[in-house]
Image 1: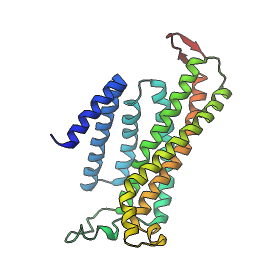
Image 2 (image 1 turned 90 degrees about the horizontal axis):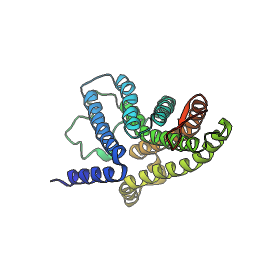
Image 3 (image 1 turned 120 degrees about the vertical axis):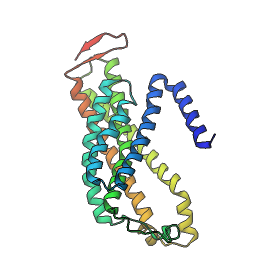
Image 4 (image 1 turned 180 degrees about the vertical axis):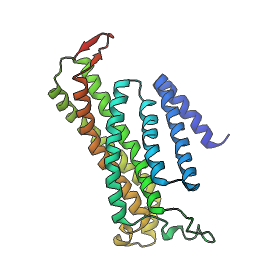
Length: 261
């Protein structure tokens, strides 16, 4: 048994013990998303139109992440709508950012690895960079949307008489905490995965200007910025959509009784 397989089994067991049915669904969500990413890579390598692939797989990945990761339909529905809108908005930002950065393709660090191989495989590196950036932001956006929707829905269940204005104000307070944790998670994730490369830069005597103009660093930093922008947009949008949506629906309290809003 390989180390990877053993860790997957441990992950499945822990998610089942901690999350029960939702944990099992979340585990399968991870597996399905992994298969979707592999399928995207295969389709791109086969020459399928990259923008079409991206547009098709954005909602597919969001559905997999959100609907398999939560047990409440109201939370899932609101989170999906908010995440999809934000993803479309962030995609526009990504298009502009990648065009201005001109950082697509392979950096000089990959030279030794690619010796003897063609660096012109007939694919559009800028479009691939855009697709990678969009897919990289989906997880952070979906997580923020679910966190906001879950918190506000629980608040509504425990206090059915809360007004729409109070719910939106509570969403702002919850959003401040979500923003703090989400941004720290994104930033520390970047530094954790990029630590060895940072050490390599410093050991080789890279100047600050060389680091901020290096393709690997620029691409990673841009993805972090896109994710942060996505989270910033998701928090208020999720609060607004759920607060307005709950005003025209019924929410079940802890005893299973419906309370009209």
